[in-house]
Image (cartoon, rainbow, N blue to C red; front, side, top):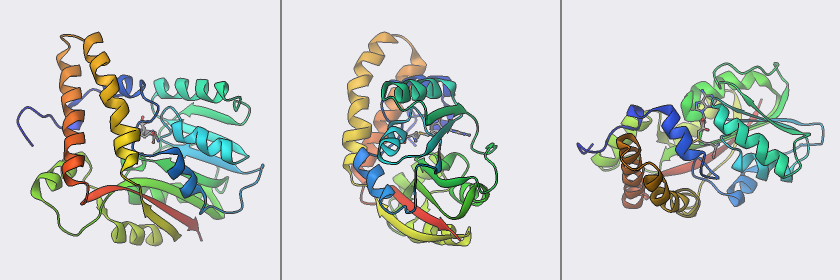
Amino acid sequence: MSEDIKSIHEFDFTLICEYFSNLERQGPGSPEITLKALSFVENLTKDSRIADIGCGSGGQTMVLSQQVEGQVTGVDLFPIFIDLFNKNASNLKLEDRVKGVVGSMDDLSFQDEELDLIWSEGAIYNIGFEKGLQEWRRFLKKGAYIAVSEATWFTDERPAEIEEFWQDAYPGIDTIANKVGQMQKAGYVPVASFILPENCWTEYFYKPQVELDEKYLKENEGNKAVEDFIANQRHEAQLYNKYKEYYGYVFFIGKKI
Ligand code: SAM
């Protein structure tokens, strides 16, 4: 890693959360892709119970909740996101059946076999893909679904610069075939997996950051931590542009057996 670019792990969570609370999404994705992933999920009704784990401010949860009936619980570790989540639900008049709660994905308070669907876009890395699939399985009814998106390698080999970046950011990154294997081993039928298109990164994730950065730097003039963080985000976007044929986000949809 270049000397003036820090590792993402060196930044304060408050700073990261504040920055991302200005954005509609906190990870790569799009409404179209949320709906595409949902199209593989069967048997949802108005009585279904759905959890969105690591929901952030709920960009994807609101898309999901407008498409399906049922009770939706968003869980995130940070109150700043849950406050925004509940405001978003209220603005869309979904507050009766869509609720955000503060909680940690490694200590969820659902009952065994309570849920018909677990959703998690760009967040399972916080517990680890395999561990999350294993630990969350007990909350699902038999035949219920899990849909998660995750940073994934597209090839067996890749240039050292990008390998090094991801080994630092998320050593759990792996190939599509290995992740599908992990899903099957964790007790799910791998129903589908598909690569998120580039616009989920460029248009929906990085472009709003470019627009935010100038304003954010002005508001935080002289704040070295903010400057370093934005330099870090810009570096990440440059790496994506340079190496996008080697990695991206992949949606994995599984059915509990
Ligand atoms: N799902 C959202 C989206 O796609 O816009 C947010 C994705 S963001 C990359 C990862 C989310 O995981 C953040 O909102 C973060 O606060 C949340 N998170 C991190 N650690 C967590 C934990 N232990 N339990 C619950 N949420 C966590």
